[in-house]
Image (cartoon, rainbow, N blue to C red):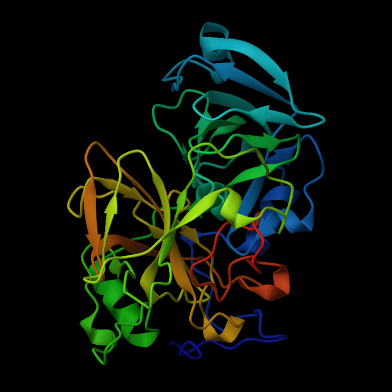
Amino acid sequence: MAGDVPGQLFAGDSEGGDAAIPARSTGLLPAQEIRALIRGREIQALDEIPESQIQPASLDLRLGGEAWRVRASFLPGPGASVEQRLEAFGMHQIDLTGGAVLEKGCVYVVPLLESLALKHRTSAMANPKSSTGRLDVFTRLITDNSAVFDQVAAGYKGPLFAEISPRTFSIVVRRGTSVSQLRLRRGSPPATDTALRRLHREVPLVDAGEGRGAGAADIDEGIAVTVDLAPCDGRPVGWRARRHAGLIDLGRIDHYHPAEFWEPVVPDAQGCVVLDPGDFYILASKQSVTVPPDHAAEMRPYDTRVGEFRVHYAGFFDPGFGYAGAGGEGSRAVLEIRSFEVPFVLRHDQLVGRLVYERLTATPERLYGSGIGSSYQRQGLQLAKQFRRSS
């Protein structure tokens, strides 16, 4: 795994500090620039935004006080607001103030506490939070006039809404619950395979394993990630969600017994697992993953070239994930996988997705890790934080 990044100097504790690299004019915005957007009112909220909401290169978004149960997922499209579409497709309102159940198989739209008034060179994009994806809760960001999910146009001024569709477990949420996160981008920074190869030579982004070395990485519009299904004395290599489990309250941490919601996945002697259509699986990457301090990464969520399945709903990796200088050496990517249409055989070390890296305008003041309460540093095969780790 990587050591210190060449040319990077950090002050303070091992969770981050001031970098010696010069600031860039384009790229994802680190925590200190997100704070500046809040002070400048480009990011606004009905309630004060606490420091705990600001991550190294993203902002947690909070649900407002009411949800709309809607007939179907929708996009407002040019010239229309989300509220106008809710008038057409909304079925009934649900008060989230004291907590409410969002049932699996249903679609909800929730106004968020945050809104935006971005300048013309600043855009944004959203992902589900890691715990949201690991619970198979499908959530996407919607803005007024938008023809796409999860993308906020440069210069957007207006409210934000979350579409939420629990797929496997019914969930309990309340006003202030965070199910997604927002990344802010200034300009349009280039991202090329040449730059990714250079970065991988400096800081091995995935460990190739088996003595193959950093140069052996498969880079093609992102760096390849494969699945770990190696047989190991009958021990599970993953988890499959039970179809008829109870409620999960997103506010309860280290609370639920895994066996009540999950059953173990054990590969056959050849290291193969058959994915059943419609079932939801938690697996892990074979490789350890490193995100350098001045970059963030995203897992490409669906690629028909590697099979008819979706991998990693919550695909964002903050700066410092898996980085040795932030106490993360050995962190693997947890894969949230659902097969489509037909049963699909996964084998050990099979390609399941690619990590795409994007540079930041500057190194965050603090990196992803235990020093800021990050839940998944140094993770292996790990369920969402709502489940007990001791089991």
